[in-house]
Length: 263
Image 1 (cartoon, helix red, strand yellow):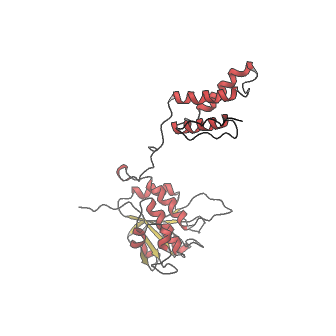
Image 2 (cartoon, rainbow, N blue to C red; image 1 turned 60 degrees about the horizontal axis):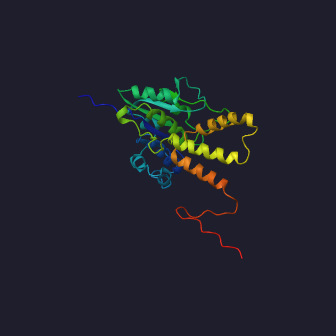
Image 3 (cartoon, one colour; image 1 turned 90 degrees about the horizontal axis):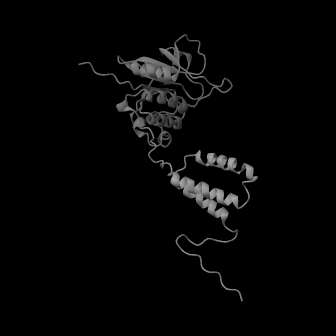
């Protein structure tokens, strides 16, 4: 039986300089379901104590990270190698966006894929890019073509995650915590509250424009799709605005004490 090949690409950090950046790259990987990290001659050696805190819990990625002496060794078992760069390297290869590369990676079922990321200061060298089958790049501000390592990793990891099959797809934050819209009765009460306060201050003037002004006010107040908590909060605001300044309302559920009689 032929063994299925994982569509999860290997993330190869070539000569990374700071442990913090390795940790942040691991965090970016795990956010989008990637776990296999390979390191090519990290400058400060490996393991690096600075990587753990920066990974913010992505320990499974750091614990499984393997170190290689060269890029060629790191990608030896991968038939589909992509090099990330935002600069011209004098190498003629297919140039793909992260989205296009992600689609290709998902289509490969014959061998593994790897994505190369260069060191923080200079990016991949021409010799590194020469080992790849294609280049991944993004349109970027020519006056500031600088992505940090974790940013570059997260761009590719996110695009790859979008192509996961339904059963493997990552969790999408739901809208279940949002409250439903308030009943029309509550909304009418709030609008009436607005109008009563405004009428007391001669807002609906001149009289021949009053109806149009009321309609405009209603249009503004019905746009936001208020929920019942928002309506209740706004009613509280209106009640506060309608009180006589300096008079403190009694605690909720208690009646206001009668004022002392004057002598």
